Amino acid sequence: VKVSLTKFNQFHRKRSRTNLQSHADVNASATRPTNAVNPDIFLKTVSANALIEIYSPIGHYGDQFIKNYYSGVFLYSEFKHGYNLDIRLIVNDQYRFDASDIPNDDKLLREWLTKFRNDFDNWIGSAVTGDWREFEKINNSFKLKVFIHDLYDDPQMREIQFPQIQPSNDVQLFFKNSPECNAQNQMGRKIRTKLKKRQCGTSKPNLIRMLILNFNLTYCRNSQWLNCPMMIGKIDETIRLIVDQIEGPLPYDVVIPAMINNDCCYGDAVILDGGRADQIHKLISDAHLDKKCIM
Image (cartoon, rainbow, N blue to C red; front, top):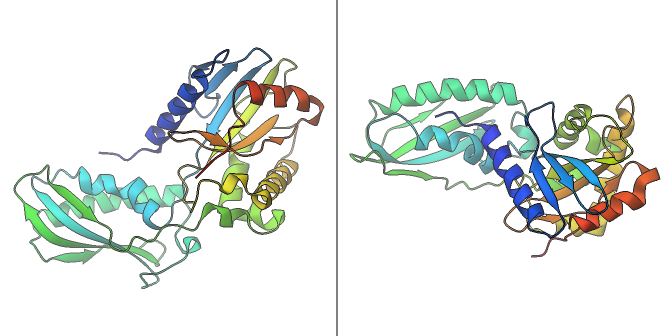
């Protein structure tokens, strides 16, 4: 079974539309087709219309790296039996590491995943209880160790243990430094790439182009971080600097950081088109895109 980021993104786009549609006088519909060229949502309120692109950067680090990409390999293996596995991440021969130690290259990670899936299936087919294996490294640094606690006749019995449980670096850390440093780290580069795609098209007088940065798939220690005054300032400065570094006209009119989950909430909007600030603020209020996060 292929683990696909598309499914993660589709889930969060649908959740966002459902949340928007729960408010009176708000109509949110999916655009067609939804892809890397077009935005995700057409929003209509009493005050204005908007095209919305939702971007959910995923932290490819620590336990998220395993849960979001590799659990599917173990849970959906074609092996005809069940098992209880102990999984460990090892970086530079250490069980403890920083987020920056994990490769931040989607293509590289997916190529490794394909090879790992084949190697795992071949190994588990002849392994017995108590066997373990360290699988091939990425960039001569990162590797995965798998230990078999038990094997079961029932293929539906799949238990995956992560005793290491090391979360990735808190997403706040990607915004803690100067705007110049933040713009160059892993998160800053992801945001720049997304902005440059300009999926909501060119500026139009009666249409607001909005990018929602959904941080729900990154690790954070509490849900209120988007409301912290220091973080509000850091995010604002970082996004504005990244936009200034992109050639051409403004890629979006407004960028809103968010946590799109069962109870969607939002940080302060970074209004890029200052000439339409009042109109943008009114749209955000009408669509309830200003709901603050609580514990």
